[in-house]
Amino acid sequence: MFNWFRLNFSLSRPSKYVSIRRRIPTFCSSRIQTYWRRPPRAGRTALYLQKNSISSPAVRPVDQKRRVKVFQEDLSTRTWLSSSDSTAFCSTMRILASIVAFAAVQLAAAGTIQRRASVNDVANLGYATLNGGTSGGSGGSQTTVTTLDQLTSAVSGDSRKIVLISGRISGSAVVRVGSNTSILGQPGSLLDGVGLRVLGESNVIIRNVKISRVVADVGDALGIQEAHQVWVDHVDLSSDRDHDKDFYDGLLDITHGCTGITVTNSRLHDHWKGSLVGHSDSNGSEDTPMTVTYANNWWHNLNSRTPSFRFGHGHIFNNVFDANADGINTRDGAQLLVENNVWTNPAKQKPLYSTDGGFAVARGNDFGGGENTAPAGNFNSPPYSYSLQSTTTTRSNVPNTAGQNLSF
Image (cartoon, rainbow, N blue to C red; front, side, top):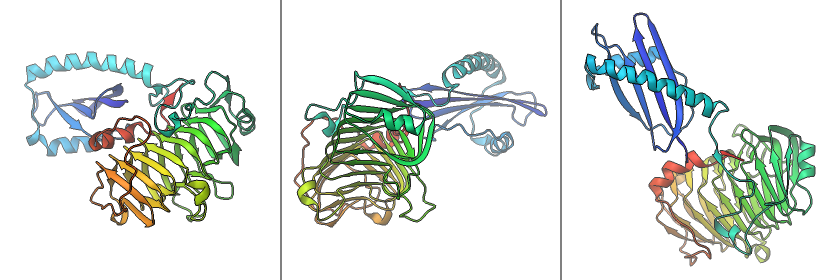
């Protein structure tokens, strides 16, 4: 996974500041910021290093006036280098800044650096790996689409196919996806007002797709119904919280007896209704066989369904839940295994609970001060192998890796 090493290089001269700011990818858990300035005493050049643990990869604008004010307030807390040491260090920093500048232009000209993936990747975790696995359109024909009509045509039918979405596709529609299909979003692509539905199909992969603002009259952002062997990976699903809760429907709904579903490395955010498994209390005969895995996802600023799980079996591990107004609700006999997840600011102190007869086995979670009130279940081990991250690693890594950050 990529975090960012950011070099901030500022030279103070009389009445003039020169600032060089570049960023390069590195396997670091935080950012190091380097500042170079002339302190109040004339004739000295001074340097110090400051560690900054801001997790967002966005580069914020430089406010030189504010930064200088902070320096002046905090001089007593800094470790300053001598003039001779500073001279040598500054020479080195000039060379390094040039190297970093060149690397930044080459590596980041197109925006955030993406992690490489293959169009032929297959499901590698969770229930989607069972029953022959989930390969989608791996090895099939490959098409790139840029319009709604092209997308609708390209993903239909049961032939093995790989469909790449490029750019922004806007509309007000839900597109039906056929079996044996991989839908892959190119970096920066977006389905605006356009949802995807996998209905009665099997062997489908949806990766790196960003979907936003699909209104309720159209349907869910991503709906999976009567489907089997579906892998949802690195998707970004959202709308806004500015409208009434029924203006949009669900971000990710899995209903009507789906089996072999895995949702990984995805971001669900800024919406009223997150993810629903099982749509009705009276649909147990169809929904009891359901099997769903949620792993390494980031859920934040959601009002409900994080997720709401009826019937069936669910494995929920290494997810991060930030500032949501609801928790995991296990319902109607559902058996959940909930492991090594992290909550911050859990609303109403109910990160894991049951409103009507669901069950959960909870292990290794950080409930963020909330309390697990779900009745103890009997689902202790899923029928596949997996590796758990610690809650500390989950908290650090998942917000930086979830969502649309692959390139093909």
